[in-house]
Length: 278
Image (cartoon, rainbow, N blue to C red):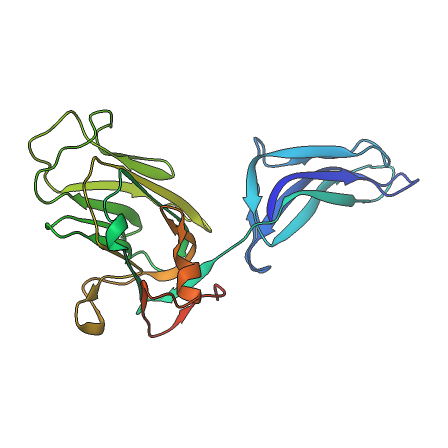
């Protein structure tokens, strides 16, 4: 679920309450991360009956929560009643084993778009691996890959094309990248944009591409770059890890794969579409 707030209360009709605590969360129930506020600890209760609610500054998507008492009433014992606020969170996952990929082939009638949006969350077991790769018909391509723990994004528009004059120069920042262009450049050479991935559980990424009538890609592959006509053979090191809620222009790629839709092709040694195993 997506947790937005927590509330605590002491033990009924007693001198037992917790005055500060840590909040931990986990996807597996084994490896835990601490929800961090300014000083790490969360303020609790001053008596046993009043409810103290703490709204989280950023929501936490998790399966398990753990409350770790730090301080309590010195005249009593630890007493804690808890309530968790949030909403259900639908998770579509694909677990790649380093030798698998998903290939999504576009509907020919919808190849040319004004704006393309790719969003996903991922966690990886390795520091190398291709997350996604797209190819067009004029030598244009995009590639997003992990390289020595960095997140590298390659962009090549192939033949010169007119870009949206309201866009911005390509850049990377925070959780995602926005790729556009300055006013009518004659050529755009291949570009490399890089950011660092610091040991996150699931890293969230959103890519937005804003072009004018540029059919950038005819297909997208996720988890690797398969060689045409050679199933199971890949051009670069494959992604080994988990992708969650993988969307292209609002299309749920993992859901299409689970339903064996014809526009999805699975190149798989072992690919789980139901659970992340690690």
